[in-house]
Structures are given as C-alpha cells and as structure tokens.
Length: 247
Ligand code: NAP
View 1 (cartoon, helix red, strand yellow):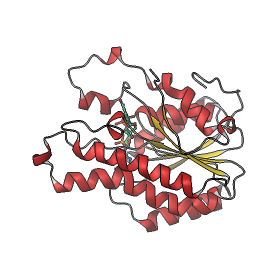
View 2 (tube, protein in one colour):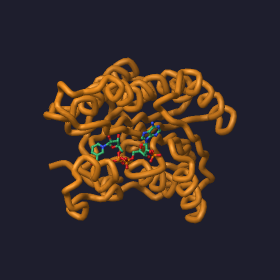
View 3 (cartoon, helix red, strand yellow):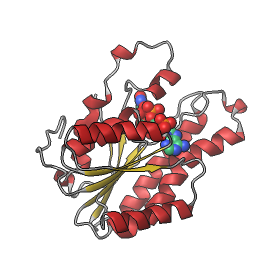
View 4 (cartoon, helix red, strand yellow):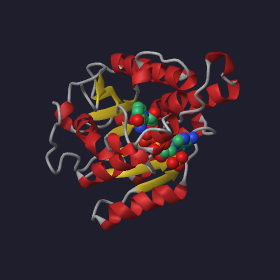
C-alpha cells in the first residue's frame, strides 16, 4: 500500500466533504480528490480561501464544488443537521468525509493551560467531528462504500511536553475513530485515521518557527494515503491509524 497509485477515475461519482479545505493539507486533499473525479464539499472558516480552492477546481475542469463557510468553534448540532439536509437536497448522497480542520492552540507547560484554549481546541478538533458524524451517518449509510478519515498526529499517540490541549485532542480523535469503526464494523462505512507527519503548512510553521520549511514534505507528497483511504481500493480497511510518512 505504501505510495499507492490511484487510478485516474478513482473517485468518479463520489461526493466528499472536506473540513479545513481552504488551506494546508485540506486544500491539497480537496484539489486532489476533485482531480480524481470527486465532487467536493469545501467546509472551512475563511470564505475567500474556500473560494480560491473552488476557482482552482473549476479552472482545472473538475466537477463544481460546494462551499460551506462554517467556524467549527461556534457550530452546534443544528448547523450540522442543516448541513446534512442541504447535502441530501443538493447531491442526494455522501461517500466520504475527511476531518482535517485543526487548531493548534497554545503550546505551554501543563500548569499554564488556559481553560478557554483547552475547550476551543477540543471543540474544533474533536467535538465538531463527533457531532458532524452523528448528523451525516444516515447519508453515509446509503452509500455503497463510505469512508470517514480523521486526522491524527504523532502527539496523539505519545504525549509530549508542552503540547497539552492539542495532543489530548488528537488522542481523543484516535479514540473516536476506533469507537465509530468498531460500531460500524461489517457495515458499508469504514473509519480510519491519518497521521500526516511533519508537513509544510502554516500550522507546522507556528509550532516550529525556527524550522526551515523546505526540509519538510509538502501536502502533495502525502496524497497517496488520502487517495487510498478515500477510494474503494481500501474497502475492508477500518479502525486503522496510518502514517502518511511511514518510517
Ligand atoms: P493549516 O494549514 O493550519 O490548516 C488548518 C485548516 O483548518 C485551515 O483550512 C483552517 O481554516 C481550518 N480551521 C482551523 N480552525 C477552524 C475552525 N474553527 N473552523 C473551521 N475550519 C478551521 O494546518 P495543516 O497543517 O494543514 O493541518 C491539517 C490537519 O493536519 C490538522 O488536523 C492538523 O492537526 C494535522 N496535522 C498537521 C501536521 C503538520 O505538520 N502540518 C502534523 C500532524 C497533524 P482557515 O485557514 O480558514 O483558518
């Protein structure tokens, strides 16, 4: 599976929702999924970033995307149920979700963790995905082969000093993925995590300001795994946490 090569029409006729689709890894995944034939639903905080991804997909001849400007920090179950109803009306189906939006919060010693930061990171990184999955399960259940991909991190598998809220949110993400995967085992819905590894994005630059970004892999170099888990070639793979930069 390492460095999987997807057939050019791997995602033809699929409708895929991507959170945090305006920047970094999520932007690259949206462009890649569209290039492989998917109709993508671009969810994110900053509308003009989503509009730029929309324009890029249209200019490349992709299927027309949908834009969902939504700040996951303040979104409630009602927003997610409304989104599910809109997807049902507009597309009549949903084949995949990539939970990619993420917030780093503040890196600080444990004793300095501020409750507002803690709750905001949990809300954006974990709670939003839990609520959105609850709202979208009925649509996903209608697809022949549905795929949910969560985004983890190395610090979501082994804790690291100073990474408090973010690391705990990624441990929780791994747990949420395992629970949903187990509940939907032997169904048409598979659920997995990707740990991107160190990747050249704004988030990484904020966490490691002294690092030369050119020493890091670009989001495009990770897309083999994002394509594998979203395509039917990964049918039967569920409950796994996979590395986009395996050692
Ligand atoms: P990024 O460039 O900072 O992009 C994060 C995306 O999430 C942006 O599109 C951002 O939207 C969106 N987002 C943040 N807060 C949001 C909110 N409240 N509501 C809606 N959208 C929100 O980060 P990235 O590096 O691509 O990260 C993508 C995922 O990979 C994250 O889950 C991250 O934890 C994970 N990850 C990254 C690395 C790495 O080295 N880069 C390593 C391990 C894991 P705006 O641009 O509009 O704010």
